[in-house]
Amino acid sequence: MTDKNRTVAVLGAGVAGLAAAKTLTQYGFDVTVHEACSEIGGVWANNYRSLRVLEPKWVYGYPDWPWPSETPLYPPAEHVRRYLTRYAERFGIRHRIRLNSRVVAATPTADGRWRVVTETDGERDSAEHDYFVMAPGMFNLKKIPDWPGQDDFAGQVMHSSEFRDGAQVAGKQVVIVGFSRSAMDIAVDIVDEAASLSMLHRSIRWPVPEKILGLIRNHVLLFARWPTHFAPPWIRPGKTARLLHGKLQGGVDFFWKFFEVLLSTQFRLKQRKLEPDRPIKLDLFTNLYVAPPRFFGLVGEGRIAAHRAEIEAFEKNGVRLTNGELLPADLVLCATGWRHDYSFLPAELLATIHDRDGMHLYRHMLHPALPGFAFVGGVQGINSATLYAMQSTWLARLWTGEFTLPAAEDQLAEIEALKAWNRDFVSARPNRSQVLNLHQMPYIDDLMDDMGLEKHRKNRLADQFVPYRSADYAEVTASTSPR
Ligand SMILES: Cc1cc2nc3c(=O)[nH]c(=O)nc-3n(C[C@H](O)[C@H](O)[C@H](O)COP(=O)(O)OP(=O)(O)OC[C@H]3O[C@@H](n4cnc5c(N)ncnc54)[C@H](O)[C@@H]3O)c2cc1C
Ligand SMILES: NC(=O)c1ccc[n+]([C@@H]2O[C@H](COP(=O)([O-])OP(=O)(O)OC[C@H]3O[C@@H](n4cnc5c(N)ncnc54)[C@H](OP(=O)(O)O)[C@@H]3O)[C@@H](O)[C@H]2O)c1
Image (cartoon, rainbow, N blue to C red; front, side, top):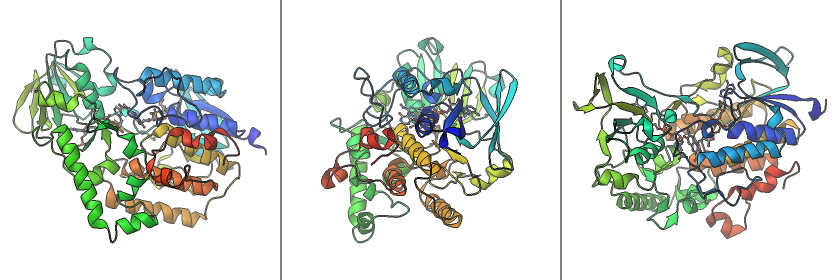
């Protein structure tokens, strides 16, 4: 059988699904994409109005698909939508995408293929494919906590992704639950329109500024190789990391302490009673978020009232907090994050690869018990479009036989080792096994090693100190015979 005959069903047409579809098509597979929504783009298609990319455009994107020159440095969601639409058109995958087609079941067949059942407008359809790639995203199902008394509340409860325009908040007493990027983005966005604005937090993480001390863009640090050596060491630490976390541990601790003082000073966290709960070296590598530039200033001015409390119960005209306070509210906006839905996989199969910590897959993509299956986009990195394009290239090259995997028992041993490393290091939450953040770089290095490609994309000094851009991997994702 040639690759041309081999069929692949891809679930999802977000950044990950599109990368998988483009790359597998490029390698000769016959791809069909099923997208549950009426448009492509995933989180970029359907979200709040001020959403934009966190990173400068040269670090967020597909390596072989540059942004148009007129795109702002931090592309707003509508630019991302256009960027993705043109990508799908340019690489000939637009006609392969079936919109409003939800995958409701994906089951391995006795002869090693995948039966994929889809639903469109209540009608079911089913087809067999040689491969099944899931790319449902890690943040696609709204999480709204269930609080007592919610049904008697006279106001409205809304998830962050449902916020669209000022009319929804004008003249209202707004309470935002959550203290991460969605919460802060929306707070800055609506502060001039809401009658009052309160925010509730149950924990505080270290904020990363867009510009360190207002001078240096954060990607200089986040996207360079050298800071990764200072992180709690990756599962297979390199020579430098072993030295730093051995004899030179004192220096590493000083480095992070210095950084904490710097950020605390920049955001005046102590004066604003917003000191984070955990050391930065853990937060940065697990719960990374970039603070919108005006946010902490607005808290300092008292225009956003930050409360360290959770909702205990709803009252008719407001919320009662765990600290006893009663906050009047017309609108409670839940920027409380996301859930996953993998129910399209058979329960017994899901139990093999998923537990309370999230997915456990070899290279975060495959499992020896599931031939013909892959998850693209199942890791949280710092520039996901680049990361998912690299995963897609790795997958296409594997499935076209350009390299082979270690024996099944070695893959399982690696999965177990990663599980243990992860539990030691990442705080408990439903997707902790899927967090890479700044460990994205050593992870991509592993993919490059597997493919037999040169992972150091720059010369010696630059490779450590010059931030990596998406385009540094352009040759890898553009060609079917990359270097
Ligand atoms: C608000 C927000 C902002 C973000 N900003 C950034 C950022 O600035 N930089 C960054 O690096 N990362 C960011 N992220 C992380 C983000 O998740 C990725 O950047 C990326 O867009 C995710 O792409 P994805 O394709 O994996 O998932 P998604 O964008 O979630 O796409 C998944 C797609 O799968 C579809 N789908 C799901 N289930 C089914 C099914 N059963 N059948 C058919 N289709 C299905 C969904 O409808 C969706 O279109 C952000 C996340 C959120 C929530
Ligand atoms: N491009 C952008 O500008 C942009 C914008 C938004 C989001 N993002 C990305 O998208 C991802 C999701 O971000 P997000 O802000 O939507 O979600 P998130 O990071 O998961 O944050 C959810 C927030 O809600 C809180 N929370 C959750 N459940 C709660 C409960 N029951 N009661 C009280 N508080 C609760 C969490 O507190 P705890 O921390 O204590 O759990 C946290 O503060 C992140 O990777 C983020 O970087 C990017």
